[in-house]
Length: 117
Length: 113
Image 1 (spheres, each protein chain N blue to C red):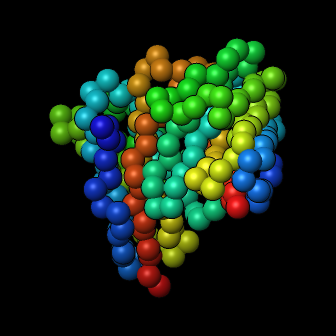
Image 2 (image 1 turned 90 degrees about the horizontal axis):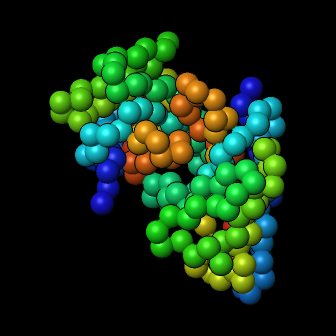
């Protein structure tokens, strides 16, 4: 149980285009989803917290107009990187939390490698 | 300000021996600590957690120890296996933060056959 999927697993795009990444909780309902990015040999950097049916909460320094997050249902959150530039190239990982009392861990997706040319 | 610190970027141990991964934190409000394992180009996988009211939690080969007075926790893996080779992240949670976790920078564990 507690499987989270991400799609696509890898994407290459041209500078200036937008890229959408999907995160799905496959066997549980996720009231809260998180989006992270990871640079090589660095920690996971939390970008935003996404709650179903409400606006995402962005961490300091993360541009909300650049990284659009939508959490339309209890099993799906999307991250859209708008007008992508080479510096946006990174490994993006989502996680989902079931929101049940006592469920302390987040479950992570396999990640999406974005390369902007 | 790095609230969760893993000061050893890498650790190498021999198969069958004990691996000890360390983590220090600065925020005394953290109420839960978790360890995740991550392979390259994959998402982290949850390993084991411990509540701040406990000092030890054991699950098979994995044991986490918490020393609140020292703001230090450690993950022990015994016996270590080559398949344990991965990056290990320590994470901590602030209560009331909507389940947000703060991660350390990770320690690359290499278990040599």
